[in-house]
Image (tube, rainbow over all chains, first blue to last red; front, side, top):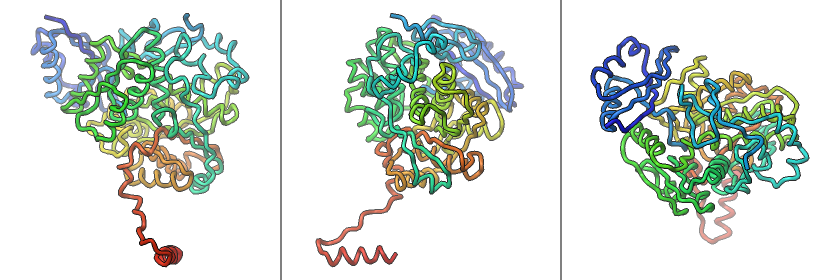
Length: 83
Length: 415
């Protein structure tokens, strides 16, 4: 059941920018819908704003898969924990 | 009644306007939302005389703070001393130096009492009965204390391995304190998820636009306490970078509403070397922030590896001709001791970062020695005693004998 929506910043180095990460994400997680909101590559790093929607456990697996592929995944708030 | 001054929320990226609700991210591009005001209406209403006639608290600038009615939480917060620091000025070799001393901010001894006062006053206006935050220290203490005083339910999330002293400073207020185990990234994402799922006012998430505005009161107070003018240089510690951008916004707003004439000011940023993503980007002349996965510094209140306002802090420093510096842990400890020994002010580690970086900025000429400087010191040293405990020596112990005392005194005089 598609009951969960997560909004994330994906951060990666320039090398990763050449890899078809989002295409692979789509193929590996057919049950997760993603919506691209913003993307940029400069200063040696790439940033993507991505909304993921689907079953909570599937979204979690998709996030874990992105991380296992060397992508840093942060909530859109970035740091929710302050000093 | 709706405020005639505070009008809406606005996306900092695309400028789209949003109603004044508990929301913080632009639905289109995920840009952060901030509070927008009708400055023409404010300039017709506000005056130095009106401000001077009000109680000495951060709320004397209420037209420029984002609530509709009267403040209800933390009404007496702020208006901390601006100390003319002559002995420290001499030690640093500058002509005119001031300390904005938020080590004595009421009630939990850090600048967080300002932001929490605004966040919870607004939360009460919006009808929330439960407030929450995720924090490793000052914010947790402040939310717990203010929620207790306001009769609100509160949930405070902390990493499970937080030191016992910091846990005590929140638990004493009767908050629901929840330790979360696991890697930092996971804890962070869980807190974001909790904030989205429950109908609570999560101070640094869904009501962040209001919360962040409280920091402006430091800038307002500095300008008023200097005699309605800006210091040529203001040095501000950076964690998320929010405080620095808000001091900038405060100075700009005082010009816009006619309280201070247009004049030059530079705002400089300070970070700890063990977690300096904003300072690094500044020094590399970059716009994108390289996030720090594992911060390693004694300045834990500044150890934010993914600073939400880093990009905007870079913009503020560059626009005002400011600069950024960073200092090592030993330099932080030395600076804490220097401030204590010259001015009698005991700061937490973040204040050591600010002073340590100011020293470097002065030595490198980025802050000229003949121009006025204000250091923003944001928290009390009693909160981070462990950082300096091994660096300040021990008391001399003698028997109850005058002879022993006199020989000790002689030894010290000879030394």
